[in-house]
Image (cartoon, rainbow, N blue to C red; front, side, top):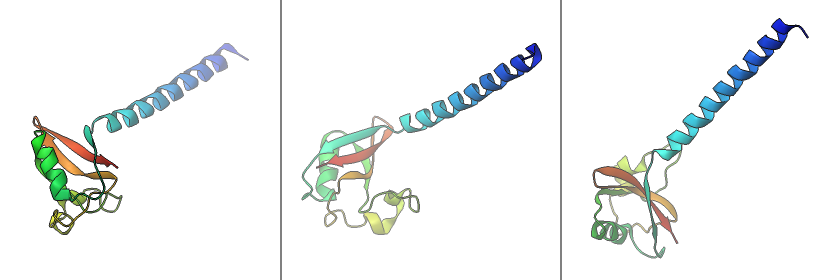
Length: 112
């Protein structure tokens, strides 16, 4: 193999590794940006009770949703019909909404 072809091959491999490396770093940083709080609770409690638990731990601006986020509705906590009756909406395993603590929004997860 000539020296020119070998150098082109190396530069192509180097460029590909830079592109792939940048892509994986970006994906990791996207997932690392969302702080979360995980609460072990019984599935029989309501979202109103979950909200009270969060308030007692210093959280505010609590927005809990009766449905989980989906690609079609990525922010159900912003839809009034999903948040209008927390006393009757049971918590569900996994994501339940968002809350704020120390000025930072966190994702609220329930483990039951």
